[in-house]
Amino acid sequence: MKPTALLGAGLFLTIAGIGCSVIVSADVPEFSCDVRDPRVCPSGQVCDLTRGKCVVPSDAPSVDGTDADDPDADTPDVDQPADGSDLPHALGAQCRLDADCESSLCGTSNMLTTPIVADTGPICTKTCCTSKDCPSGFVCFGAGTGGNYCVPSSKAGRIPAASGGKLPGATCSGASDCRSGLCQAGKCVDTCCVPTDCTNNTVCQVATLAGPGPSHDVWMCAAVNAAATKDAGETCTNVENECRNNNCIGSKCRESCCSVATCESQGRTGGHCRYAESGSDRIKFCEYTTNGLADDAKCTQDTECQSDFCDPETKKCAWVCCRDSDCAGSKVCRPSGIGLPFLRCVSLR
Image 1 (cartoon, rainbow, N blue to C red):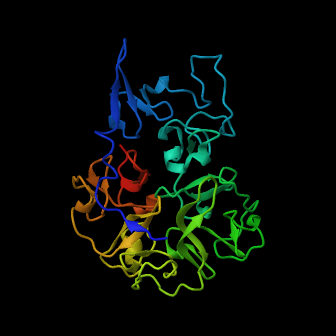
Image 2: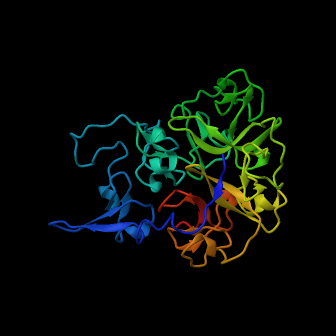
Image 3: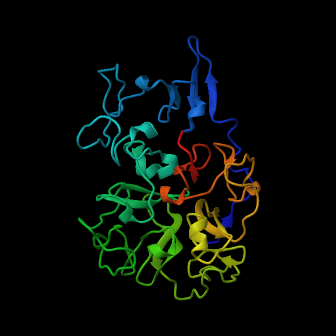
């Protein structure tokens, strides 16, 4: 496993403009859309991600998946809010738009992976670091897409403890002992953002999560490989498992992170958090230098920015993040609506 830094803007520039195109129609032109950015739709319209179409809010399909003016439409088998209340809905409910959700985040397959949403379509979710950040019945799922999200435990193929449950690193005899619903080698394992998320001699390390669906690499609290000897910050030679956190990038064992502050708290003064590739997945790690354009400066590629991240949606430099608490001021941590759903700090419009 040899994560590599993401350089340049080629990853993000495959979609021209800001994600909107005109479909020629015999009547009033319709606008197709595939991103969350409100600028892609005409004034007064929103993007219905499931239909790839700009619509006025009243024309968006109802949350049960049927058109409001079609009483004969079949209702698909989807998760619904338990109390049947109007919008916004709680975590796990089916959604069309971010505004449908109390969390202001509607998780699509691009964000949560296809296996998670295959039976219902997009669901309301929120960011997390470990499963204790999620309500009962939900676990923190590392999707390998740049962030972790709260999803119903059943969708993640897990059976966590009925109530409470042991935290990462605790001894376990089975999955149902653990808050995460994951027990490996006699220890509860779970996703993590920073080393302090892990306990009992487990380390926040790059590890492979087996399912559901194709396996992918995420930061996870797990027992250290006995052969690993290098701590974060030490020189490494990209040998598999040489680093205790299994993350050797640029000849250094690199720390997990969520922000400049989380890097500095691990001794990386002047450093910052950025994205890397781990196979086909994406993780965050501490970079040791901070040069370039400041936050919110206009940019065209990652290497121009102090953060090493040029937001493809806003065309501005932005800091990467794990949760809202990683962002300064009134900014929140949300996935990019263009390209891969990298989490970054943005202002809600």
